[in-house]
Length: 71
Image (cartoon, rainbow, N blue to C red):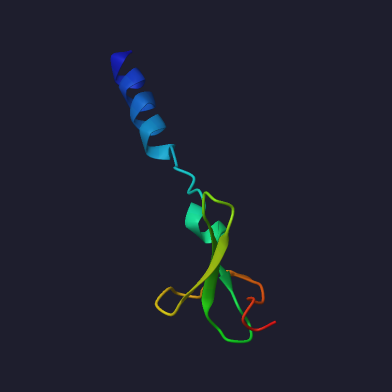
């Protein structure tokens, strides 16, 4: 019976799949469809906001939203 129990334990380990969670940084990054740059709003502790734009971040899979520069 220990052989059967060992096979069950091995099959449980093989069939477990990890579910990938979305990257948390991607929730804050947006793609501007007009200027084609990635941007985010940086919020400071004193309540002010600063718009940051990036050229080096891949655009694939980002939500599209027009930035304040293009409005």
